[in-house]
Amino acid sequence: MPPGKAVLCFCKYPEPGKTKSRLASSLGEELAAMISKVLLEHTVQVICASRFKRALYCYPDIQHDFFKYCCSRYHISLYNQEGHDLGTRMYNSIHFHLSDNRYVVLVGSDCPELEPAYIDKAFCLLEEGNDIVLGPTRDGGYALIGAKNINRSIFDNIAWGTCEVLHQTQRNIRSLHWKSACLPQVCDIDTLSDYRYFLEHERYKHLFSSISNFTLAK
Image (cartoon, rainbow, N blue to C red; front, side, top):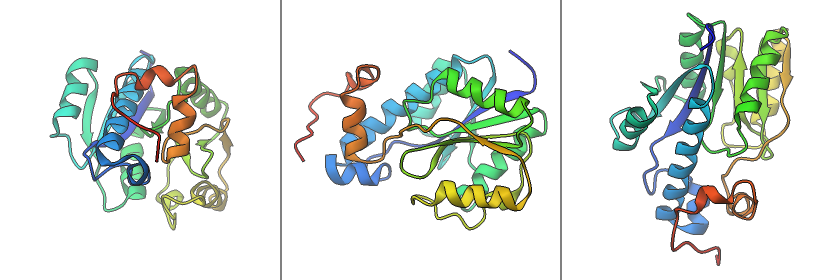
């Protein structure tokens, strides 16, 4: 395990009615939560297959059974997300791990296309001198942020959950006069059309084989 590199996964407990609201509006709260759980475990498997230090940042806290299951099965450390909003929580986690790592990569838990090679490329771009690396998503956000340095202002005035997230984050990075780079665009799962895409994709449809009695009729 190379020293100085850490991969953090930000996740929310997959409780019906409290996760994937846009997906739930089409498929129902129970199925949306099941999909969220599948995506989270897949992401944990991906980062635990890496050669880097790794941690699972849990919301609202680490006490839920599924988080404890991930810790036990995959030997991944659990941390609470600390802060009053998403940007603050992301900053706090990256800042904490940069204290004893040269580079930190933080990923979300709902993007099947976040594969080990994608994470490796983020670290390569940081090693090439970039302060920040972003993994853009098709909906205008990002599924990955890598950091050699971090500043609170990167997460200021971000309209989280909108198509402006990537643009606003890049604006904040430019204001610091920092060097940044973007990875190839990926697709995460927030909507019914996103789910259809992966369900019909030969490379990823197996992820959802454990989910029975679902329908795409709506």
